[in-house]
Length: 106
Image 1: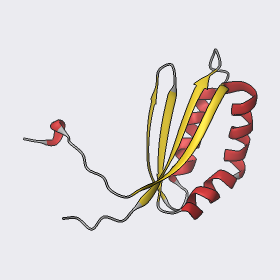
Image 2: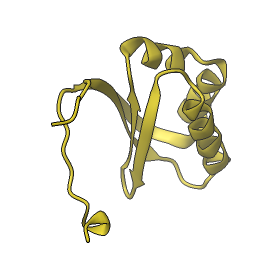
Image 3: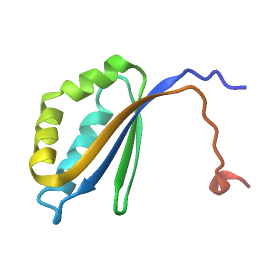
Image 4: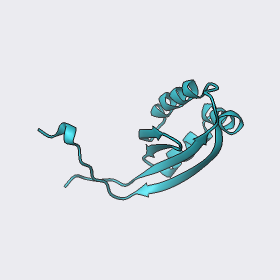
């Protein structure tokens, strides 16, 4: 058994406005910036009618610091003004994980 340490997930669910309006460039910038933040562990994202991005962090303090990052605050404002018709943020504690990966077996 591995030495699992609980961590946190920030689940950002959203519905976009029409058009890009600079969204893709900013999303890429924010992902690169997040990767450099202390406590960042990873990110997963999918978009269809509703977009879901889950970022992973080692502590609630790391999440608070990311939320307060000046560049991230700017992106949040742009999101409200230009990119989203709706969004919701959920912060969860991950107590356990397991996976299946057919690509890495045999």
